[in-house]
Structures are given as C-alpha cells and as structure tokens.
Amino acid sequence: MKKLAIMGAMQEEIEPLLAYFENVKVTEFAKNKYYEVNYRGLDIVIAYSKIGKVFASLTASTLIEKFGCDTLLFSGVAGAINPELKIGDLIIADKLCQHDLDITAFGHPHGFVPEGAVFVETSSQLREVAKEAANENGLKVIEGTIATGDQFVHSSERKDFIESTFKADALEMEGASVAVVCDALNVPFFILRAISDSADMDAGFDFDEFLKSSAKESAEYLIKIVDKLI
Ligand code: ADE
Image (cartoon, rainbow, N blue to C red):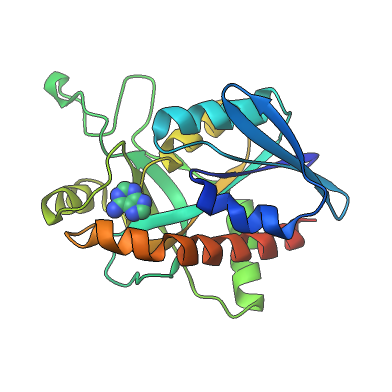
C-alpha cells in the first residue's frame, strides 16, 4: 500500500478522523475538499463525498485516479436490517448491492444490469485485518451484506423488500457505488459502518440523534485498523 484513501459520505463521518490526524493539507477539486495527511509514514487522503451513489462514485474515482490512492476504506453510519444489529454496533460488508437498481422489466434480477453483478465483494485481506483489530480491542463486529440505494429508508415495507430480495444486514446510500468503482479499478477496499437507526418509522429521528456518536464509533475502529495496516 502506497497511499490510503479514507472516505465518508457526510462531514460528521470524517470529522473524528480529521480531529485525530495532524498537519492536514486541504486541496479543492470537483466541488469537494480532499484532506491529505501523513500518519506514521503513510500518506492518507481523506474526503467526504456528500450523500448518495453519484457523489460517492465521483469521490472514490477522484481518490484513486487523481490522488493515486491504491487502497480505500469507507467509514460511516448505516440503518440496521439484521435485528442483531443495535444502534452503535459495527458492521463490515463482505459484499454490497444496489437495492434501487431495477431493470426487472427486462427479466433481470433486482440489482443487476448487463455486464455488472448483483453483489460486489470487499477485500478479504482487509476484512481479516479489521477482524484482528476488533479482537485485539474487544470490539464486536458483524460481517454481512450491505444494500445501497439513493433513498433514506424509513419504512418497514422498503426494509422488508431489501431484506427478502438481497438478504441484506444493513443499508446505506453509498457503499455499493464505491464498491463498483474500486472493483472496476482493481483497488482493494472495505466498507465499515456503525448503526445509527433501524430504517423503520423512527429512523429519521434516530439518525439525527445518533449520527455523531455512531460515526465516531466507526471512525475510532477505523483508526485501529489503519494502525494495524501500517
Ligand atoms: N444511513 C443510515 N441510516 C440510513 C437509512 N435508514 N437509510 C439509508 N441510509 C442510511
């Protein structure tokens, strides 16, 4: 690994990282800010994309193609589907899908377009390092499927559809698009999330209440993983 990218979607998701690292150099590009640091000899570029798959794809592509990052770690919050996941709990994706990608009218399965795949897998090596870091620090982390879509899910109908169609454990709005970019560009990556809500009718309220604390849980764990990667 020569240069590491760390991505979030919202300012709150990268704020704890920017507070942790020193001597941050800011570069503006494509209506976004990129924060460059050197941490224990490793060059790291940090950015938040803004919410949703399009902005996340742009930022992931920029981190890789413009800044030359060769590994990408995503940190942020998600809505829980798996009832074992409570607010503040950690999930690392083994694979991701786009729950709102739908050309079923032409006989294709949900989440599939020709020459693509329903699921994109994350790097098993990075997941192993993440699991070691969790064990060493007494953290519980679930490995599972994350479903991504350009919708804040706050109803049991939509949640049930995503659960039954993709067997997903959690949902959010960026991971699978980052996965598609990293997979296409051959960059090992993982998607880490801490639960902020349960994607039910209380989700909007819970999200506002727990965004900051859950984003911090995810970011603090991510720093432990980075320490192991160096
Ligand atoms: N990220 C966190 N909670 C979410 C939800 N309920 N829907 C979509 N993205 C989320």
